Image (cartoon, rainbow, N blue to C red; front, side):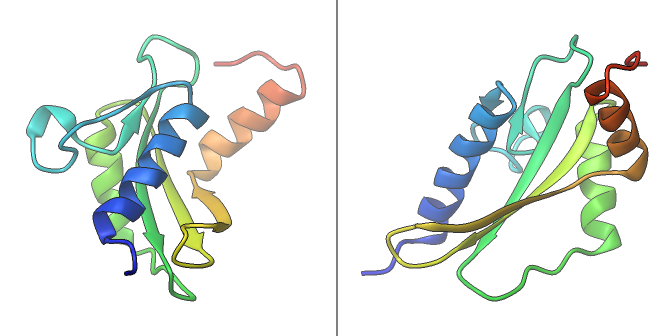
Length: 118
């Protein structure tokens, strides 16, 4: 039997929380105080609020309204859209990608190069 959408998103959310050294937001999307799928500590240089999308398909559409939603739900933290492509029904990951603003990416590059984090 193929995995459910819930199983796909649960696996992705656990990965995302671990990736940012944060926590999953239980009931994400259905409670005003727990929007986005994962967050790390707000008082760090890089506080991320991550919304994940996953699929078995060949594409995931990213719309401006999707981006606007994660920006709003980030509530001042750095918004991040995480896209996961599964290769098979065992939930083997084919590819994990992220979408972030060019300004955040520029700051990340500066920090990685040893510059001052603003």
